[in-house]
Length: 131
Image 1: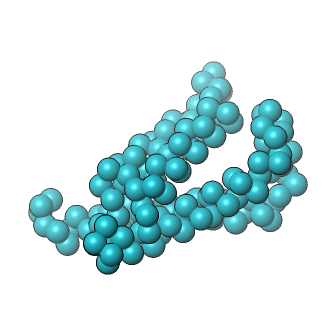
Image 2: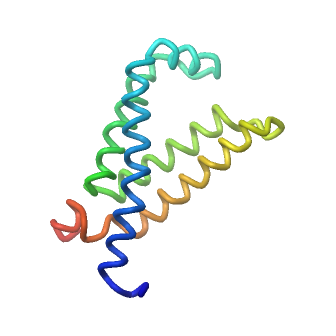
């Protein structure tokens, strides 16, 4: 079953979609809550001027994962982004809630690294282009 190309490609699609939607949705939500997000970033010592880049990264790379375009690069960029954001905002291991967010995000980064290695599969723009 695991060597079946259809199962492999469907699994890669099922892995890409929710994580891609999660990032795209997060970027979109930051637009609606711009001032609050900017304040939160600044409270963690991150310049609020970076928020447009954060929004663009989440939207663009999230959409790239959804459609499977340049998936390996998008997954690598989002993995790095996720690790960095987790260290900046959730690395408070004495706080059970922040600790959970940190390890959840590390799990997402792990999935993104798997997608970087595996690629998007045939059910994607990359797959249609032969990449």
